[in-house]
Length: 67
Image 1 (tube, rainbow, N blue to C red):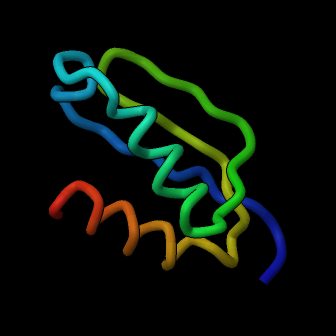
Image 2 (cartoon, rainbow, N blue to C red):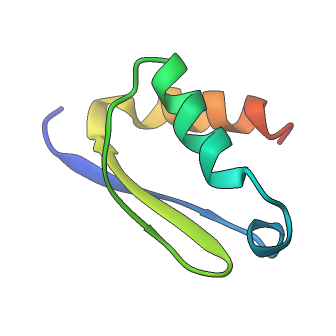
């Protein structure tokens, strides 16, 4: 599969807990998932990743945040 997807993490805790963005980026890096454009707001962090990494990214981030 070619292309990109936008992966978003949304939650009120993003603005009240420090280190969330760092944890997201480190988790992806440690699992060899490249990320590109990053945007954030008070309640969300969005990244562009390769479409082929979608399932892996969901799994590793879910595990990192105990979801």
